[in-house]
Amino acid sequence: MWTAAAAMAVAFMTQTASAQDTKTAPKPAAPATAQQPQQPAQQPGEEQPGPGVTTLKVSVNEVDLVFTVIDRKGHFVTGLQQQNFGLLDDGRPPQKVRQFAQQTNLPLRVGIMLDTSSSIRQRFQFEQEAATDFLLQVMHPADRAFVEGFDVQTDVAQDFTNRVDLLDTGIRRLRPGGGTALFDSVYKTCRDEMLTLKQDFAVRKAIVLVSDGDDDYSRSLESDAIKMCQRAETIVYTISTNVGPSRDKGDDVLQQIADATGGQAFYPVKIEDVAQGFHNIEEELRSQYLLVYTPADFKLDGSFRTIYLQSLDPRYSVRTKKGYFSPKEEQ
Image 1 (cartoon, helix red, strand yellow):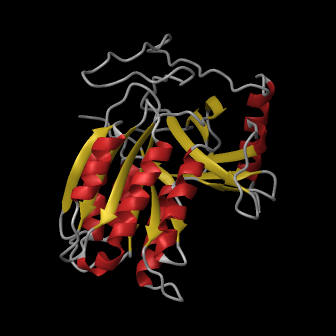
Image 2 (tube, rainbow, N blue to C red):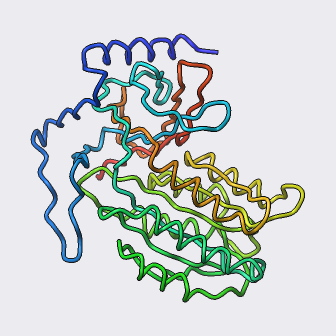
């Protein structure tokens, strides 16, 4: 049921859209401090985004929101416009919508996290093969990915690169064995790999987590891991390696992590179907929308701000992150 505030959000977004050409994705309005964003200086070994990729200088009071729309059968819905959605940020309509576009070509920054604990030893080969196939399908020249195994600690087998051969070599190097520190590993990966990732243009940050969801070693809580993913603005997709007749506690953990970050949890019927989970993620990453907006009453206080985004068409549902942490002003 829509609240009065949600209705205001709908009216605001419709009014904004009516002033723009909704047949084509509007160009982003440049922030006052960067009216003509420049391409970032090329770093050694780095390639610039390919043709057609939007470059965007995002100031600290702008939210870069990536989301997916699906119908009742789970099919991706594309081609919608800004006025088809209602948005509340921390319970208020946005102050200004700066950009709305279907970003099928936004550069990806993807981390592949493979559970290498002893509990998945018999299923590990399928994980490796499916991960390599996924990278072969998803990687474009402007994309970067890293590969990591985890048990009681993390092992980054290959850092960010766009070379699938190096990523495949990293995947093949991983070996299963040991306990499972799932929450510690997710926390550390988002903190060290995603939170520190600096880009001068808009990217989508995502982790593909392949695991049975069990944790018998972490010091961090599940909530700690989720909060770090949210701070790093990283979507987490999970693929369960449990193939029993019913879902267990580990599957629920994978679902909760995915839901909180705007991702999705996949539950293959048999271990050979893990590849289908990777395929579904690849399809979703190329079927998403980008909404850039300025929140109302925004404060640099490090607080968590909730996001409520809904399709006005009841046939469709929206999947996105539940919120984000505002930057904290340095003293």
